[in-house]
Image 1 (cartoon, rainbow, N blue to C red):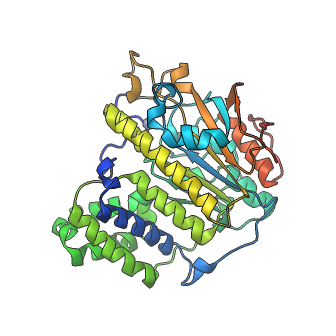
Image 2: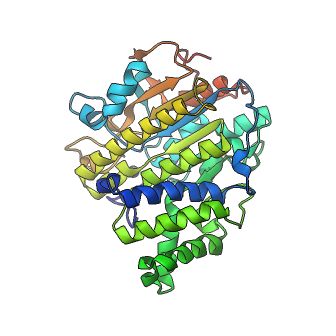
Image 3: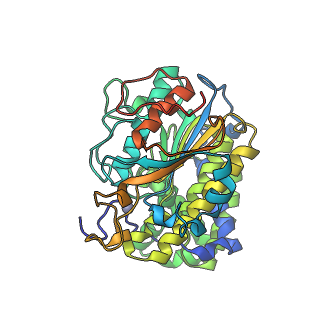
Amino acid sequence: MEIGLCPGAERGSEFVLDPGSLVDPNKRRFLHAAGMLMAGLLLPRAGAEQESHAAAGSGHKVVVVVIGGVRRDETFSPDGMVNIPHLATDLLPQSLFYRHARNEGVTAHFNAISSILTGNWQRVDDWGKVAPTTPTLFEQFRKGLRVDRSNTWFVASNKALTSLIGASSDSNYGPAYGANVVFPKQLMLQAVVEALRLGRTANMADRSKVEAELESAMEGSNYEGLGWSVFDASDQLDPRVRATIQSAIAGFVRSGGPTSGDELTFFMTREIMRKFIPQVLAVAFSDVEAAHFGSYSLHTSGIKTADRLTYQLWQEIQANPDYRGKTTMVILPEFGRDPDGSSTNGFFNHRANVDSTRDTWMMTLGAAVDRPQVIERSIRHVDLCPTLTRLLGCPLLDAQGKMLPEFRG
Ligand SMILES: [Zn+2]
């Protein structure tokens, strides 16, 4: 692959990283309300935010956060620590930290995340046109313990993923046991694309018309255009959420400028946690993939964003009584990036067969941590799925990955 064609490149996105968005109150309000909007869209009926369900299996909850491709040089190294103050200072001392977690499969996003979620090295289409071939954690959990779909969610910023990430092609499992999969960033992209297509770009700067554009994009596509896979997608927007999003979007449009896809993914994730209380939740951040454009500063800004949002997610787990004390959160990059001086343009890409690209790290927080410790032994990305399967109390399947003994079951 050539530069810029790598899966996960953010080319064409209106919502690339903008560190300025962190201090713009209009954008903050927009993102918050957008998260509420999309969670509201998914409510099967008004009042469903009160929904709760008994935990299945062990009752353990797991949250897996993948943060794109980042090298050790920019993260857990003496020079990289500056990019990850929360991971390195706030979270490391309470974590079970694997210093070497290896991707020994394909170092492209869909395959890498599929491998993490299935416990087997996947070698399907890099752009997610083909489902993983062995059951995902979502399917194992749902089929093994007869769990409802609302209990499993995957929320992602990464454009190299598709809704096929939520279920495998295994004939004994498959979409009937898959997760809800949502790509929050696509909601706004769809609205912009539609406005452009129909020559209504002026509407995007008009307070009263932006609402109509967004609703048109959502309802016109019946969600399919968003690439989502969601149960019982209601065509009626919860009116309480509608009022909030309308004012927030207007503020966002007036403020102008891009904002971060990962920020939107975070707010969406938090709303899903509060409304659906999923027991198995996966989140894919991807602002770091601005590296494909060759901007080192945008890449490191993306790392700082992932560091902050991951910490905020952990704070939400600590503050939310449905999660506190019964949740294990695992944070890992999908892979590293190519080394400086390589023939593949260094940090731009992630396709060199070297340690800089394959050797990453993994942090575990919460209920499965018996005591904080750093493990020097190398583990593999495929070891995570069977380890989490056991935590959840699911029947174990044969897999290439092996359970990690340091996790407390
Ligand atoms: Zn990438």
